[in-house]
Each structure stands twice: as structure tokens, then as C-alpha cells.
Amino acid sequence: ASGKRNLVVRLGKDKAALVYVLLLAGAYAWLALGALAYEAAGGLLWGFAGAPLAAFSAAKLWRKRRDTPAIVPAQAACLGGFVIMAFAGGLGYLLQ
Image 1 (cartoon, rainbow, N blue to C red):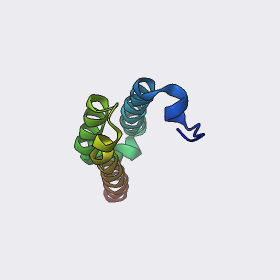
Image 2 (image 1 turned 45 degrees about the vertical axis):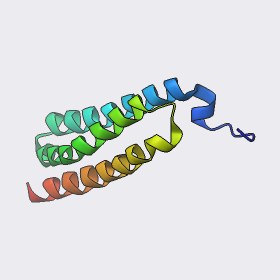
Image 3 (image 1 turned 30 degrees about the vertical axis):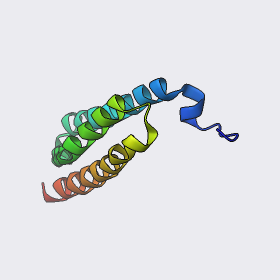
């Protein structure tokens, strides 16, 4: 691995994939909890518009975690899901 000591190298592909899936799930759980805990933040639930891309990303990464080139679509979907989550959640918050 040419001296690389990033998180995936340190944890191994299986554990790193699990951490990734848990972080994604945690992000959406935090979004839901924040929106439910504060009535004024209900518009944040619009952020769940990014959940389909996040779910695709997590599923693709989990299935192909040992095949690095095959997870490129998962990386793109993760970025897209984040952008949609942030934009839709912010827009929902502003419009409520």
C-alpha cells in the first residue's frame, strides 16, 4: 500500500465499510432527531430527499467493499446524497 496509513488501511476494508454505513445511518438519524426535538426545525426533514442516494451508496459499498474500482459509483452517490440532504434540509428550514 506504499506506506499509506489511512483509515481504510488501518481498519481493513470490512470494518471500514461498516463504519461508513454506520456514519451514513447516524447522519440521517441525527437529522431526524434534530427535526423532531425542535419544532422550529421541522423543515430539516426535507433533507431526507438525499436518503435514496445515501442508501444506494451504502448498499453498493457494502456489496463491493473488496473491489475498490467498483465502489466509485458509491462515492459519487454519497456526494450527491450529501448535497441534496444539505440543500433540501436548508431550503425546508428556510421555507417552514
